[in-house]
Amino acid sequence: MKVLFQKFTKDTLGGVLLHFGLALILLLILALLFFFVYLPSVTNFGESITVPNIEGMQVSQLDEFLLKKDLRYEVNDSSYSAEYPPLTVLKQYPHAGAKVKEGRKIFISLNRINPPTVPVPNLVDGSVVNAEAVLRSNELKRGRIQLVSGPFNIVKEMKLKGVKVDPGTRVPKGSVIDLVVMDGGKANGEMFDLVGQELEDAKFVLLGYFYNFEINVVGDTLGEPPVVLKQKPEPGENIKVGDIVDLWVGKPGTEVPEDEE
Image (cartoon, rainbow, N blue to C red; front, side, top):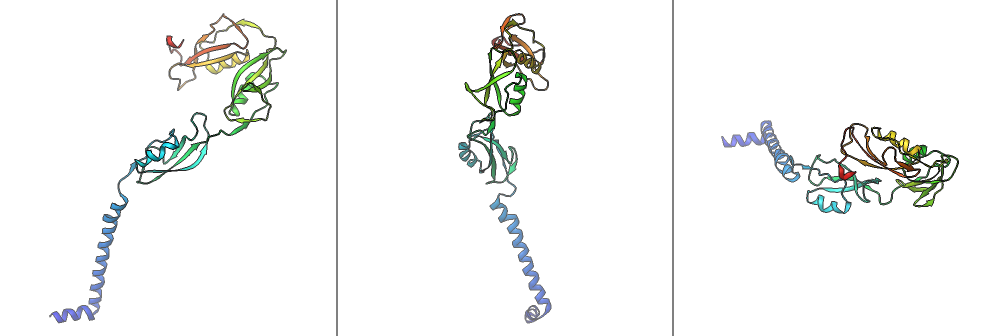
């Protein structure tokens, strides 16, 4: 009987199929062990890491911070924001809260050390209201208004840090441009009532009279345009062209705390 089985397994088609089937079963077992036992143990299959929020962090802090979380980083590009210090993370991918595997690279965008430059627009012979809009559209800021005697209410000169600057001069983005403005013969006057007006309307009026202003935000202003809650000088008080008007702004009906007045 044993001789017949050996002869069957070695010399017949059935024997060949038997050996092939056994080999196939062995390969299947090995494959299952590889994919469901070995591979998960090596790759931490099914395990994930929550990406932390690194926006706003200095790049010098990232190595130690991410190493503790089994993550890495790579600088993908750079841009500029005046709201953050140089070499600060502005953006990241994957975003905070995403689930990734151990060792994943976080691609980041860094804030440049030096801001990009923009040309100073030509504001000479234009109005202050126009100058405000043009500066904003060129990512520059309006500074102080210096009044000089003159028959027209127009910009006579532009300055950067007290030095005259010509149109077309490239300056860092976000620079503050002061304006030398002819007073048009205006002198002293009485302060008008701005309380209750929307902030943008009040600014338009103040610029038209060549008054400087400081804005103090009270409470949360999200959801609707802020209005003037309080002003100094108050309506009826004497004011000179070029003086500073303090404005407290917020949502209608908001009380101005005494310590902010």
